[in-house]
Image 1 (cartoon, rainbow, N blue to C red):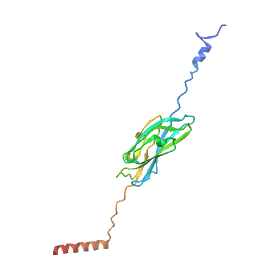
Image 2 (tube, rainbow, N blue to C red):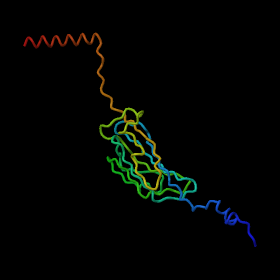
Image 3 (cartoon, helix red, strand yellow):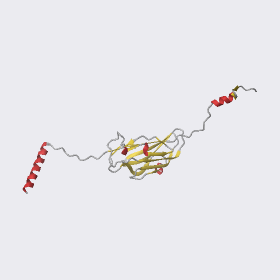
Image 4 (cartoon, one colour):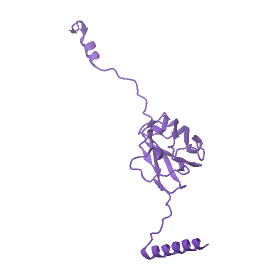
Length: 197
């Protein structure tokens, strides 16, 4: 049978050449990692909970090899070795040292999507480190994406800052007119007594 041709190429072959080849199945995107402090204001020696949240998108398979290391800013340390959260092996996967500044998570299990789970660690201020405000995100008290190295997870961390209320210095009472008069009289009497000795 005589087939119509497109130049020297059969019409069917020309059409096939215009249809994009179907690509192989793309791997599912990794879970997304975020974190936040609560509360964001503590007194010296108080505790705030640092929560890491892992979000797995709809249709994504469960993961069991998620890992990340968070190095706390210089003004914050791990308060104790208590680890919580809703990820199945949150405590077993998380290494902390009270008084240290590194949180290491390895082989964390994240459920199939759409789902989220968490890891929580208690954090406090380093000794004699205080922060009156977070408006400028001071480096010593702001935990950001740059503090975290991650594997098999997307680092989507936004800066999270903690206010550590500075201790209040004892106030010196204001001296009124009568008080100043009495103080002056006392000083004069003391000086006169000293001269007579």
